[in-house]
Each structure stands twice: as C-alpha cells, then as structure tokens.
Length: 157
Image (tube, rainbow, N blue to C red; front, side):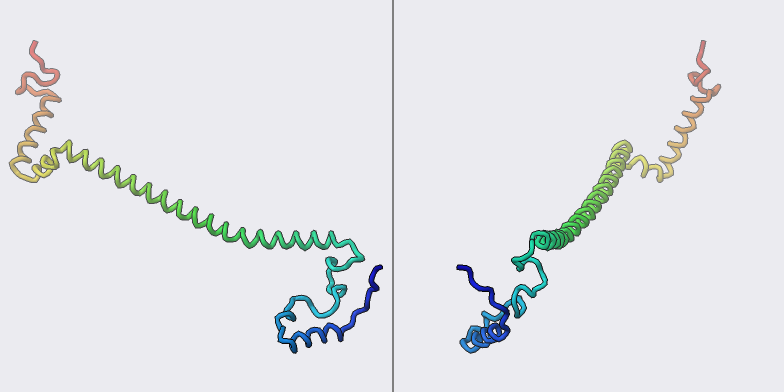
C-alpha cells in the first residue's frame, strides 16, 4: 500500500537538527541542502511530478562546459610556453650555426694564409717591399713590358 504524502512540517526538521546536536552528532547536520522539503528547492531534479530530463541535461551541459574551461586554460598556457621555448631554441640554433660558419671561414682563411704568418709578414717592411715588387712584376707581365721578353702579347716570334 502506498504511503500517504505528508505535508512539510518545519518543526520536525528543526527538531531533528536539535536532537543531533544533543546526541553529539553535529556532523550529521552539515549539509548543503537547505532546510525544507526538496519540492521547494527550485530545480526540476527533485520533483517527481515533472520531467526532469531537460533540467538535468542543461545542468550537466553547463557543468561540462565549466570543467572543460578549467582544463583548457592550463593547456593553453603550457602550449604558449612550449611555443616560446621552441622559438628560443630555434633562435639559439641559428645563432650557433652563424658562429660555426664564421669559425669555419676564419679557420679556412688561416689555413690558406699559412696560419696567418703571410698576413702578419706584411707588417714587416722588408717583406712588404718584396710583396710590392712581386705585385709590380705580375702587373708588368700581365700588361706587357719591353724589359720582360715573355710578357703577355710580347712573345718572341
């Protein structure tokens, strides 16, 4: 046999909370539900006389959006941080390659220049005079000179 629906009795609910305190069970009274019957809670979830599915679907959709927003922010922050780090690594790599290329070129020039001794020798006056004489001879050979029999365009017949 079905039970008769009883009307809301505010004294009974208040008396229950008071008796819990007297018995030393204050923790039982800690609840997020307001005092009063569930029919007065304002939501469709606790009402047996209405279809609660639209209300529950809306509530769960909002809850889903809130949770997704909470997890989306740390992910976006981590992604931005990763992009910044990637940019720093790419820039550092480009700077390293430029320094490496410069060091390779300097090493090639020093090797071709006999370790730099030929360049440093140009600072010695005697060596500079010899180099200047050699350059003048090469110029005379290239443009032709009566004093040099085998210069360009001045070959013996």
